[in-house]
Length: 439
Image (tube, rainbow, N blue to C red; front, side, top):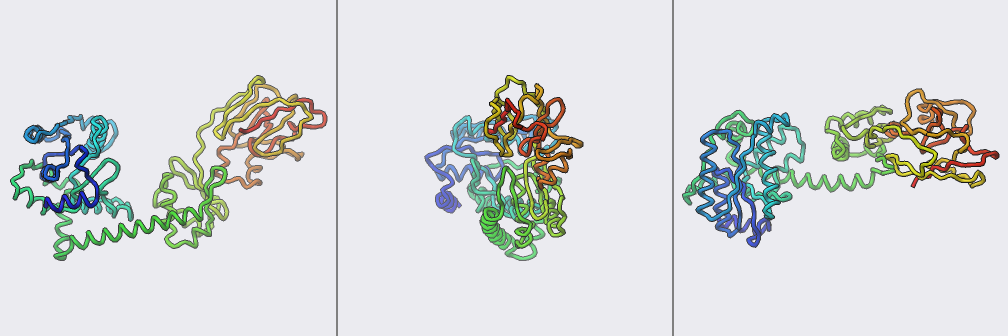
């Protein structure tokens, strides 16, 4: 096993004898085997142990065992004794999840403080299979097949090609001592149920069940990588970004094979889940225009023949503009406030506004538009609801939420970024202009 281990870490370039690492050790069979292999491969390491104090004398025994081993091997030993129950209660998570978060947070903090080159973990082939099945039980999809990576960030798992039986044989043959965690035999947790009940039953189906599973997972992982590459090409070709909005034509959804998966992979970074992706696809198929979907951070609107994605606008507190102000700031950007002679050429772009200064009363107010707001758009004679005005302009629902208005004594002078009010326009008699210019 030593030769196979050394070949593996050299071929994959995952460990370097010129660097020093942090070995995460529980004192169990796997991590003690790994410690021995690292020593024989001349890989320098320090030892880190988290004593969760959850198993009374057994926990104390684990810590003392590792401390003596580190002393015997001449290795630096680090121990952490967290209040696991308090950590779990504060975050409203299970004790098992709390232990996991504590462990990885401390390992990384220690690695950074000690300026070490990685955190070595003793996960092996059987752990990998258990992890994949747990992922599938959680409904993680094809990426759940990927399991644990041999190297991800600072985490390094050099034992993944080796199985539990091989590790056990090695430690027995080499008289390596280890500590047995009594909770590993209990079936209270899903992983232990898989380990002691479900997977052994599955392996009995055929003599080569385990190896066939691993081969299947490897092929599926490769298929997943191929899909990811195809998805990136599809996203680049089909999704357009305009004015902070991401737009996807529904025809490009309906013509795509595996559309639900493509939608999910597109929308997942924005907080949408696979069930929502399926609902979105069904809405495209039924042409359910106007349908709105929401994550914690984004809105997705089926607007006629396209899907439009945008961030949920942050709550906007109204702001006042005094006559002496020279600028103001909105989430959309900075605006300059200029006062010009009335004979200036008019700026007719939608993002800017030129208003008759003498018709305005300061302070001006900027706020988000509200239901019931009305104004007379430039060039019209009758008042129009802002909601109807935005509909006429075919402003997407996801963008309507963030539209703001400029008011003078409660009267709308400008729907910002769209149109000024007719009453506030510059005329032949205008002597002074208020020019609001986006930078």
